[in-house]
Length: 286
Image 1 (cartoon, one colour):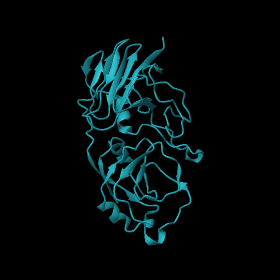
Image 2 (cartoon, rainbow, N blue to C red):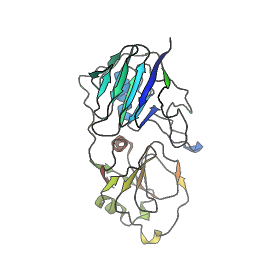
Image 3 (cartoon, rainbow, N blue to C red):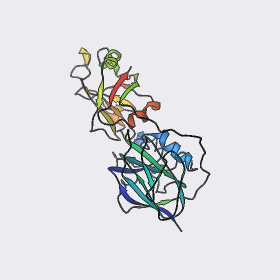
Image 4 (cartoon, rainbow, N blue to C red):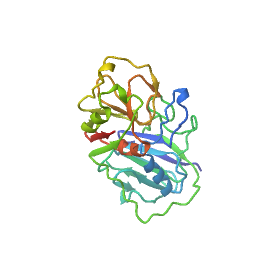
């Protein structure tokens, strides 16, 4: 019998994500994949999967899935209520689920995204080597909908035991390092401007980019009114549109851009940004 999860509720947005499809920028395809990669990796380890197995990325809770067969699940990301068949269970730990039981996620106490992994991983047809949903280009599985039946693979390993796995605590004030370049010279005293400014996360942020609100960055006089020929951009690139307010590109970003990139956020800090709710204050330290 095929093992499956049936989607009972999705919450605001639920997507199938693995660690993405890097290396396809020459095709105009972004890397995609889980925005909070450490949390997906942990969830997979807790259920005995390889770290790159596909799981569910759930935005602001509300996800519910019914298991067709006995399986092990784990929920990671920020602290979040989890119920299995109406009994409260722990997140950040392996949880045994019996056939026909429903797993429900509440709203995270802070942060944005939780990850649900299941033993065997979610099986979907890979595209360019990944099962991830890319919301910008439409590559990969569609966002989950009520009634979707998701095949899950056979377990390949034992859950990884941990004495305790405390959930991360997303903060409401982030200081994020930025490596200046390649177009920092387009801005007057780029490093000083970044150090002096505090932005807040816009509600228009998504998997494509984290949009920031606040005082605009000033261009250097010699670059006022100039346009830039489109060039390649990386995940973590801090692009500054004409309004002067930065956009930090996340996993589903376009692969080229025509606005100057003042700097790049190191990959190790992208998970913090992925969990930043609207209104979170952000300082970029150049």
